[in-house]
Length: 394
Image: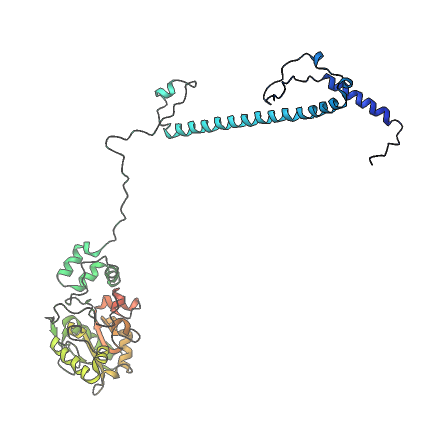
């Protein structure tokens, strides 16, 4: 520790030799003169001095001077290293500024468009010419060009087909549907809204939709081509529009030929006045709410169109409306009525859409083309078929 001496007999001799070497090295280093209280900048180079005048004997300076000299020797490398690092940092900063400036010039040159012709003045100066950064091109007097967006092609509409519009005007519904491309194409055009020339409120067409939200206009409208169906047993004198009457005759004969049995009907066309009496009788029996579920108010009944019929099963005599659902005639009608242009208008589970309780006896004529599209599409209401809002109430 502090009072211990080395057991090596050569230790004093080596120590003296090292001290002599340090003295000689110190004497060989030039020491700058500094004014009292003045501090030399670390960026200044030391002034040349006469080495002979700066050599100081360790013996003359004493022990304190020797220690001061050693501290000075240790400090000088740190000062030089600090100056070197600072110079390097300055060099890096300058290089960075040069790179940024070069990039700015390159970007400006690209933006100004190297679009000049290679034979132009800028290139004629040769490789030694200085690059000139140009701004954006001048706006022409007529203004900047406005981009034109191509409009999406409009959906094809049957209303642009002269054959279709001519058939509509002539009230030839079959020809109009054929011109539209068939029942499914006609339905798609109307339901999607691309056939505004087709009115679902015009009662002169077989595709008219009448419900609790869609009354007739005028409210007491009456068809002018009513006839009695040929060869069909009628329980009362109730006619139908000619196209529907012919279709019912064909349906009844087909059902009988298929062995389903005879089909008769109770009621077909009802005038506005007749429907007023029918509805009032239902109200008298069960009240307004009950009547609205099973009978239409005057001006809102499909029977007024001349395209609806209430059928009944017949053998030697005819049954009631309620008998049709469980009869062989009713089963055949459910499967085959669409083949003759009829649909069962009010089916089970659709009261919230159609507004009426199920009526297996109520057939509605819409024509064979539309009836096939209705059947093939699995529709259960005309509202859904033509994409119309539900009509549960008035």
